[in-house]
Length: 236
Length: 236
DNA sequence: CGGATTGTTGAGGATACTCAAGTTAGGTGG
DNA sequence: CCACCTAACTTGAGTATCCTCAACAATCCG
Image (cartoon, rainbow over all chains, first blue to last red; front, side, top):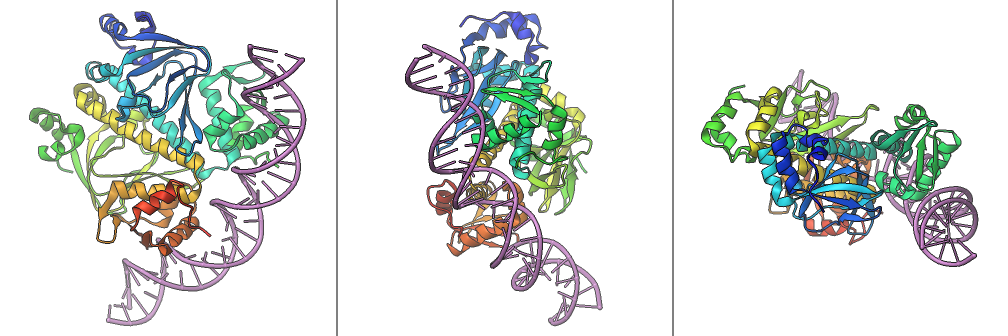
């Protein structure tokens, strides 16, 4: 819970345009927080007292419906702002943020939010773009869930994960954090059974390599053809 | 295409906090545009040269997928900002905006965007909130499409429309713009056939009154019970 | 090594889609 | 003002997708 160095802030896009004096002021208000895998940064419904930036690691944001079903809203990658309840005009966090690997986040008191937006136009613009990106992503998911069968939805989600959180390896693109079939199901609106069957079929065709919480995309090109409906799916 | 009066701007939430001098400056850059029903404000893929505020009327934003299927992204209500391609880091509009009733919109050149965000913190904050609201709405739809059967999704959508665009009448809440079964289907990721069957069942139970492009919610309370899954659906 | 979590696979069935045929409402032009 | 024409809607039958339920297998962790 110590104040972070100015250089850490400088590497984050939303602060890149601030001068050193401004950076120091912003850094003085921040606290940094190490997050063990599985630890919860904030829970759905908690009073939104801080907003955050992820410095490194990976978080998963989930929501639980009144009926008790869980969905994965999104993954948070390094450099992302999160916990922006204020921007959503909410006093509580709409979802739960959980670290999936060892992570480091910076936090500011939510009471600083309005001042930061008002005094740092670059921060405001960056925030608008961040939320704008998320909105686009959300619309993509809505469009996919409206018009695509399950196999194509899972395909698009896997490709999106590979793009956002993939690491090039000899055999293909590795999703570089632990991800379960259940996670994929909760991201695409299906069941872990269906995800399992789909990944098995893809594995037999040499498109991916999937194991317990592991996922390697071996043939992104062919997977894209299936996701885009240009090639028939591989389910029996 | 004349410059609008300062008083029109003042009534819009994103400009409410500007003083008269600022308002005049902003108004001088704006053009106003009347929109006949069915007319298109901008099309998907068009160069994003303006951003807009809807003064009165109602617009429908649609997207067409590469496969040619259409979805309704959202309805635009009076006071809403729209065409914010810049905030989405896009040079083209991601969707098509069509007037569903006689409407009036103000427009600004997109080149003014950065200056408006930078010089008017209240405008920036309001924009963040606008996009934040939309993001919440999108997440609600994702959650609904992930976890709810069709009848409940349609229920939630009808209730949302009633809330956003409903007018109290003797018999119930009237959706005050023309809306077809096809529209509802494209908002909920189903087919017009299924929507028709659902509304017929609700009509027989006295929950709604639906006709050609007409929709009246007669019993929102009971409809909410069905939408929330607290009462069984009415489909055979 | 044992328990717990994660994943695989099969069978059966329900939801909602597709295909198909008509019906109604509203606008348009004669 | 009426007849026609189109767009919107209704309804039925058959079926595919994907979910649910169930049982078991593999992997990880302490």
